[in-house]
Image 1 (cartoon, rainbow over the protein chains, first blue to last red):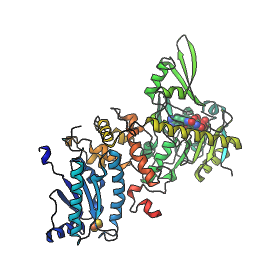
Image 2: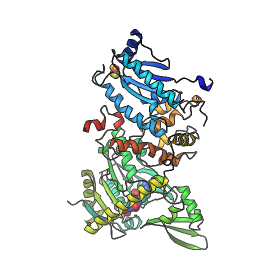
Image 3: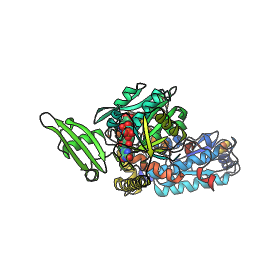
Image 4: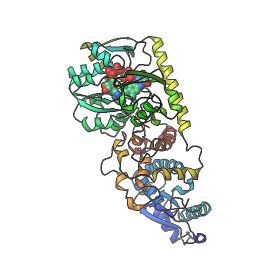
Length: 142
Length: 393
Ligand SMILES: Cc1cc2nc3c(=O)[nH]c(=O)nc-3n(C[C@H](O)[C@H](O)[C@H](O)COP(=O)(O)OP(=O)(O)OC[C@H]3O[C@@H](n4cnc5c(N)ncnc54)[C@H](O)[C@@H]3O)c2cc1C
Ligand code: FES
């Protein structure tokens, strides 16, 4: 792909009960969502093994979003507390590795927050356009 | 019962052969003889550059293994895991051995009730290959002719014995060696855990005023029991440690820790780099990896078996910029790496793993306020549901 045509590729993990439904709501409400996002649905954000996030980055995602129900709303009691714990590890990991912190996001989005979902994707897309493609892409030239 | 003693083996042969009075050996022998333990795990000297772990219930073998080997940077953790399930084992533990065993206990790989850790204070070990180079370049000895080594008061001594030339002994300041890139392993130079406080006893020469008396700190009830057992069965004698000895030991420890912090800064070539240069450094260093898996095999903290995630999710054909294997190992050790440097020792392509793991784990552990290998009741934070720091808020 020629350089000027580059568009961010953003990988989003969405939990079945909240943020995935939130993404659905964004569609139903006919909100504009940038086509930069690729959604992977998981039953719960607690299923998002940090290894998935790392794998996404190695596969060439320019950013990875971890999303789930608001704290206290998780449909599996408190699994998203674990998500939050793991995110703290991932944040330090991504930073130390030398990636920009903006390549990793954590957002809580409920089933009714279509607007929030659309805005999040817009915000992330803009940020990634600013900082450019991920250095972990396989076609990365030093 | 005070917690600090000077102790020594009653048996003169053990006292002579031991590093500082043979207390550790005599205690293990008595524990074996009285049935306090079923087996002892000790380190057998093959040469000054090689020590191999031996699991034995024969007291004579334990006696043969008395003395400290500074050129045998092995970690005993995995041997306890492999053989410790059904047996009661007593063993000498450097701080990194003790911390590894505690981490394995947290992961339910060993039952601490079955293990008595006789801790050894440790100023550090030398890598056997670097030690051979040192013998040739710094001492002017034929590396194969070196028959004895000793470390005392900041100096290292080698004794060489060549045919027709008799014995030659030479002492060199460790600091002078290390300024020139020889000396202790990088992991040891930067290690701040010099006294194994997570073991049952902590033994060493710091604070002892006699080369044939071991300074012993009693740390747990189990430690007290094995000491009592050794005294009552007539293998060991003790006296109370003098106050100035306790003070001196503390001072030396603090001095060594300061030195370690110093080394840490000096050896960290990454801290001066920018963010993108840092990534370049890691990618360059890790791209040499041939995926042999040796670092995982020796890692005293890792409790995963053949189906481990780092192996399972790795496929060389992916040709990622950095392999999934390396990324996952680094990630999984962020809260638990004890900085022992075993991984770097066995790496066939010399990846600076000690530095890499330290860079990632030190900042995470500081952030968590967690030190692995010290308290068996503290679970690894990555497994926790709640954030450690939010619980305190
Ligand atoms: C690598 C190393 C560094 C040390 N550095 C210090 C120091 O800086 N300050 C200090 O006060 N004390 C240090 N010690 C401890 C000290 O040398 C004595 O081991 C301690 O005082 C006990 O003396 P002892 O005569 O009772 O032990 P011994 O009766 O001689 O028994 C020592 C036991 O340690 C085992 N052993 C030998 N080498 C190793 C090894 N590499 N890893 C694990 N086990 C081993 C032997 O098999 C033996 O069972 C160190 C020990 C080692 C092994
Ligand atoms: S169900 Fe949505 S985060 Fe657990």
